[in-house]
Amino acid sequence: MHPLCFLSLVALCTVRPGAMDMGASNSSLPSPSDAGLRPGQGSFLYFAYGSNLLRERILLRNPSATFYSTGRLQDFKLAFGNRRGRENGRWHGGSATILQSPGDEVWGVVWKMNIKNLSSLDKQEGVMSGVYIPIEITVHNEAGEELTCRCYQLNDYVFSLPSPQYKQVICMGAKQNLLPADYQKKLEAIETNNYEGPMPIMQEIEAAMKNVQQTMS
Image (cartoon, rainbow, N blue to C red; front, side, top):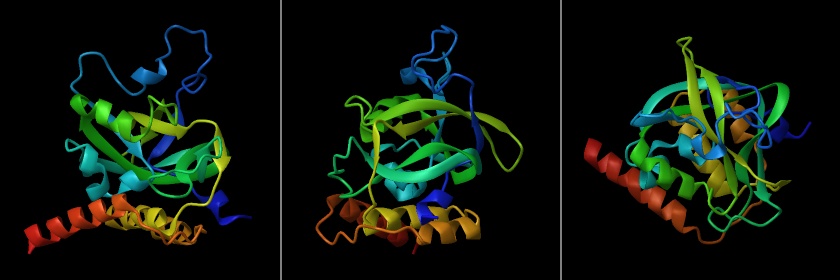
C-alpha cells in the first residue's frame, strides 16, 4: 500500500451529514463560505492538517491563531495533490488535502482564530480562485469535547507528490504539537518529488522560527 494511504489529519472528527454535499438542497445546511462559523461569534475553530500544523507557518498570515487542541479526524486519510493537476507554485509539488476513507484517521491541530482572520485564511487556501473549498466538520478532541470546525478540502483533486520542504514543515508541526509518535513516523515516510529549487515561503518560515528562538533565548 502506498505510504500516503496511511495518512490523515487533526481531531477525532466526523463531517456533519450533508455538509460536504455542495449540491444539497436542504437550506438549513451551511453554505461553503459559512462552514464552521456561527452568527454573532467573534471567533471560530479551524482544523489544520498540512503546513498550518506549524505555529510559525500559520502565524505568518493569521496572527490571531492560538492553539486550542490536538485531535483525530476519523474516516479520512491525508493525501497530496493539485487542483486539476496544476502545480502549486508556492510549494512546488502536491498540497495536502483530506479524502474520505472509512477506517483511516488524520491527526492535526485545532486553532482558535478571530473572525477578522477569516479572509486571510481563505486567501491562503485559495478559496476565491477555487483551489480549496471550506467544509464544516465535527471534531472530538482528547478531552472528549465535540467541536465544530472550519476545514479546507482541495477542489478537483489530482494526485501529486509533495516537495521535501512542504513535507518538512508538516513534520515539524506534528512534532511541535506532540502528535502521536506513530503518526509522526507515517508523516516522515511520505515520498516526495525531490524538488531542490528556490522556495520563498520556506525562507519566511525559517526567519519566523529564528525570531522565536532569539526571543526565547
